[in-house]
Image: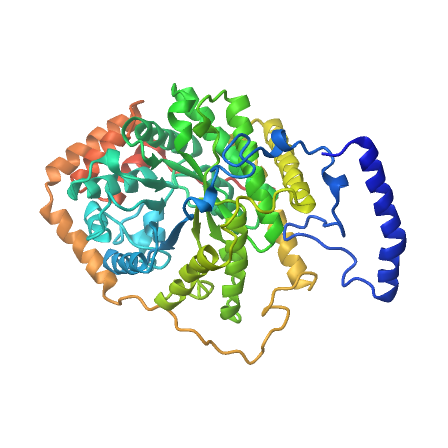
Length: 560
C-alpha cells in the first residue's frame, strides 16, 4: 500500500507523536490500565497506523466483495441485495409447544426456522427411556419419532421455509425424520432447503454430546454429505460449528482454527470416500459465535473467509467458485449472558449482533435476555428478534459492503488471527491430525486453559462484567417473567410413544432395523436404510440402539 519512503516518513511521524503529543497527554493523566487486551487475552496497542499493515496487498489479501479471497464478503452487494436470514433458535417441551413458538416467530418476521432439541434427543434416547428421566424438553424440543416431527412442523409448509437443526450424533436420524415429514406434506426431498449441524468433531473437542467412537461417527457424517450431494441439492448437510467451541471457553483464534481445521478434515474424509470436491463443497456451511469484543469478532469472520477460500482453491484444488465460499450462520454468545441484571443482556446481544453483521454473516440468531435463567419467554425472544430488525432497518450499516475494510486495526487483527490459525494447524499436524489430537486431548486442554484464564481474570477483577463484578446490585430481585412449559407435555409425549408402538406395523419396523443393522456392519451408505426405518415409525432410540450395537459407544480418555 505504501512505498518504503512513505513508510519511513510515517514511522518518523509516529515517533514524533509518541515523544510529544502522547507524552503531554500521559503527563496530564495516565491511562486507565497498564495494558489493554481483547476478550481472548490478545494485547491491543494504543494506536494502529499503516505501519501495522504495511505488507497488505489489496487485491491479494482483500479483493472485491464477491470475489476471491472473499475477505470482504461472499456476495458483491451483501445486504444491499437482501438482509441476512433472521433465524431464531427455538425449541422447548413438546412438539406442540414448539410448533406454536415457530408460528409466532414467523408471524413476527422470522425468516427461517432453527430447531433446538432436548438432551435425550441429542443423545439418541426416546423420551420414555430410563436415561432420559427428568430431562424432557428442558433445553429444546423432544423428538422421539416421525410422528413428533410431523407435529413439530404441522401447518408450516416445508417447501417455503428453510430449517436449521442443531443435532450431531443422531443427526442422520433426525434429518431422515424431517425428510419423511416433508414427504407427508407432499414435498419431495430435492425441494427441501436447510442445514443440518452434523458436526461430530467439535463434540469430542468441546460440547461432549457424542455417542459413538470418532471413526464410525465420521462415517455417518460422510454418509449424509454423500446422500445430500446426490439427492438434496438445496440442503447444507453439515454446519461446521465453532459456536460450541467458543461457548466452552476458547479464544477467537482457537474457535476459528479448530472449526476450519474440522472442516478440512470432513473434506479429507469425503474425498477419501471417492467424492469429487466440487460435488459437495458448495453445500458446506459454518456456524460461528459472536462474542463481546466487537473488533476481534469482525476480524475473525473476515479471516475465516480468506483462509477457507485459499484452502479450498489451493490445497484441495476446487474449481467451482462456490466451493471456495465460507458461508456461515452466527449466534450471539450465550456464555456472555448474565443472570444478574438480565436486562443488560439486550445491550450485549445488540453489540454482538452488530459485529456479526459487519463481519458479513449470512444468517443470525440473537439470544434473549433471559437465557441465563431459563428458555426464552415470548416477550424476550421478540426483543431479540427486534434487535436484528433494528440493525437491518435503522442502523445504516447495511448500506455499504464491508465498511470497516481498510481500518488499520481491523486489518491488523484479521492478519493476526489468520497467522494464529495456521500456527494451531501446525501443532495439530505434528500430533498426527485431528483424530489423534482429540485422542491426546490437545483441543480439550487448549480450550480449558483459555476458559480458566478468562474466569480467573473475572475472579481477580482484572476483567469487568457489568452486573457481576462491576456495578453489581446486592439488592437485585428478579424483574423479568420466566417461561413455564406445559406441565402435561411429558405425559402427552410418553403417551404418544406408547400408542405409536402399539399402532405401527412392528414387523415392518423389525425388518427395517435388521436391514439397517446389516448396512451399518457393512460399507453401504446408511441414509437410505435410516429413511426406511423412520418411515416405518421406528423411534429415535430404536435406531440409535442399532448403531450402539454395531459401533459401540465412546468414553473420553483421562489425561494426566
